[in-house]
Every structure is written in structure tokens, then in C-alpha cells.
Image (tube, rainbow, N blue to C red; front, side, top):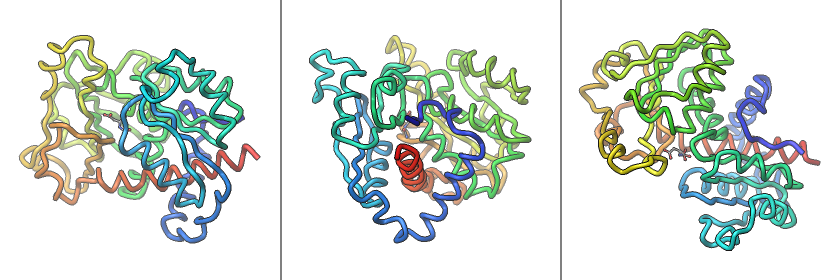
Length: 305
Ligand code: NCD
């Protein structure tokens, strides 16, 4: 059974194919409006979410399918001590495909070992978030026209930010990509990304604490939230929470065609005045998330036949 646990589960050709399908859905939504008639998506969210869960549900509804699920662990049998594997096996009886978010790294992988329907990792702890990366790739493609030859700055919580880990892993497979990793010392990208992805594939990257120094070089700036829920103590969070705030004065340092992305939710790291800058792509990014998830659901259900 084909699941999506890590972005590397999809080949470059498959990423291209999903982007092409998503663009076709944008152009011709009616062609797709009954494609999942009679199929059900289950969303099992053991952690908070707005965009990921609702975009999965909107995606399935716009494909003519049905949705069911839960949005917090407290309302599921996890609260009684049920294992992720047992939950996954159970929900396989009620659905054709499952999107799962869980605070424990690896939980969707464990679920996929027992589920009898495809599992989509909708975020596992501070580890991976492959469907956000699909959203990000579609956004870069639509905004910049290409996914190669780009200098991509990632700023904020690069340690706990799972969207960052999946995006670096995915973009490292395109040619001519350079990364500028902008974070406080304490929140640098984990070594399994620098060693196993960047160094292994000889991808050029630099690490800096200065957003101002990085900005003029960038084609894409990917801002992230400091991941409060993953900190071990409140004191560290309070010290680091306002490390970076993107505002109009900083935007003046950037190229005219740089785009600003953010997986959202934003807290303080992008001031609301930046929203009206045409380079602010983060709300366009939200909409792309629905279309690429439609393409993904179609692909996994087709392969599960
Ligand atoms: C992200 C996540 O959950 O990892 N949000 C999302 O899915 N769009 C980013 C975050 O929570 O900061």
C-alpha cells in the first residue's frame, strides 16, 4: 500500500506530475468534481491544525468524496491509551485514505505498517511535513516559474520546524539550489539534515544569524514560527520567540521579485504591514495547499485500486 510518510517517498517525476495535476485542477475544477465519489478521507489529528486538516477536508469534498475524523487526541481513544497502530487499523475499516498528524516523530510510519489504506503524514512532531512541502513546491513553481536555480533562505526555528526539514530535503534534488539558513545558534537545522542531505549531496549552503545580511541574496524567503510546543522550557522560548520580525524596512533590502513564504500560523515573525506587499505569497500558498492535496489524494487512491 502506497503511503506518503517522507517527501523522498515521491520521485522527482512524481513531484512534477502532482504539480501538473494541481495546475490542471486550478484550470478545470469541474473535471475533478466527482473523481472521488463514494470514497472517504479520514483526518486523524492528534495535534492542533487549521490549514492542513481543513485543506485536506476541502480537497476531498471538492473531489466529490466524504470526510470523517477527529481533530484532537482527547476526543479519540488515544486518550484511553490506544496505540497509533490499532487506531490506524480501525479507521482503515471506515475510510479509503487517512491523513494523520501526531506529536511523536514516526507515528504515521507506525500507522502505515498496520493500516490497510494509504496513510498521509500530515506532520509528525518536529520531524517531517511532506504535504506542506508539496504546497511549497507548487507555490514556488507558480510564483517563480521554476524550481531550479534559486537561492532559498529559511528563517526562524530551523531545529523544530518540520516544514523546513521536508522542504530542504525536497529542494536539494533540484539543480542550482543554494540555501541560506537563518536562525539563532540554538535553533539551527539538525545535523541529520546538514549531514545526510546537504553535505551528502554537496548542496551549497551557509548558516547565519542575520536576516538583514541574507535578504539581498534571496529569491525565496521562507519564514517560520518559533515552535513553542517543542521547547523543553518556557524561558528558552521567551528568549528566542522574537528573534526575527520581517517588516517593511527589512523588505526594502530584498530583491523586487523575491517571494515571502510561510507555512502559517504566523505569530510575530511577519508584521501585518508586509501582507499588502505583492511579494508576500503566504496566503496564496494556503490556497495552493488545497489543490496539491487534491492531486495527492487522487494519485494515492488511484494506486490503491
Ligand atoms: C506548520 C506545522 O504544523 O508544522 N503549519 C502547517 O501545517 N501549515 C507550521 C507551524 O505550525 O509552525
